[in-house]
Image (cartoon, rainbow, N blue to C red; front, top):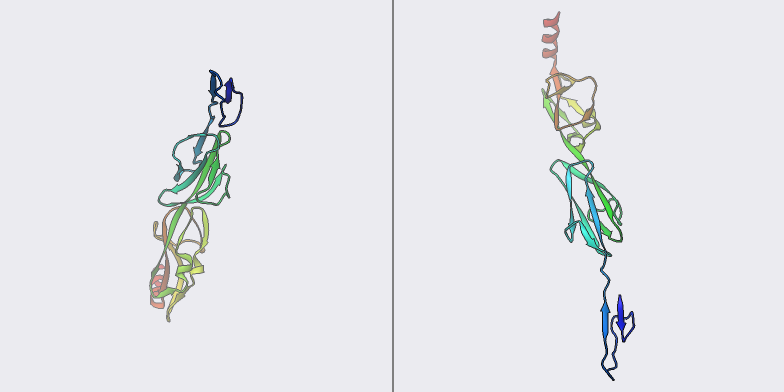
Length: 193
């Protein structure tokens, strides 16, 4: 790029001395454009850009935004020029680039009570978690009322008691803290005796 003919220069502007007829050519070089590949390897969301598109002129600063689907959360970026945890980082287009957004699926744990008792720390356990999270249901601190006994946890999907208090949350799920009184225990023992 630059000026040729009767004036040779690489400056943006030139002064032409018109003492006679002159021929001056302005030579332009196309600004290269680069492709931005947007990928979501885990599923669970999309990526939007500002400015929008996937092909950009050299030196364009493109901002990317992670848009999680319902039941998912944004986790991290790969391939951006900003910190990996930033929700809206940028990409400086100096070459073809690939940006990846990773999302994590979420699941909700609901706790219920059967019988006379309470969960003193229910809010510490009943929450939305990343899928695959290991949770100790007894961290909700089940406390029986006078004359009642805490017997364990029931899986609300199957109606069956579970062994222990440790679960792995893979989908929205509910569990019930089961409390029995002495009469229920006596009746249950007598019917099996």
